Length: 100
Image (tube, rainbow, N blue to C red; front, side, top):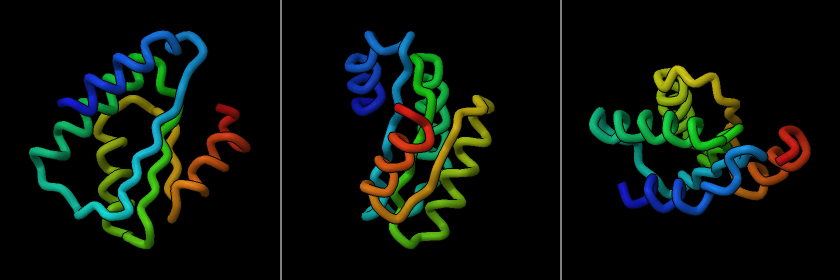
């Protein structure tokens, strides 16, 4: 809840121009249903606030990638997402491919 509120407060002036969110999940463990529900709601709120893309840095974890993809799919937002081993790769993708 803190994360969602903090991000939404910081990006409020970028709604028209768009922005992107990088989730650094490299040291994260897979989450349960309760956490997944929160992440789905957070995705919806971020897209409504102008988020144009999500970039996930997941290290080499296939499970985190699948879980992130499912959460984004369940948000029914159609937001663009990318999955990467590192934050640097995520930043490069947002800059070079998404132009944010």
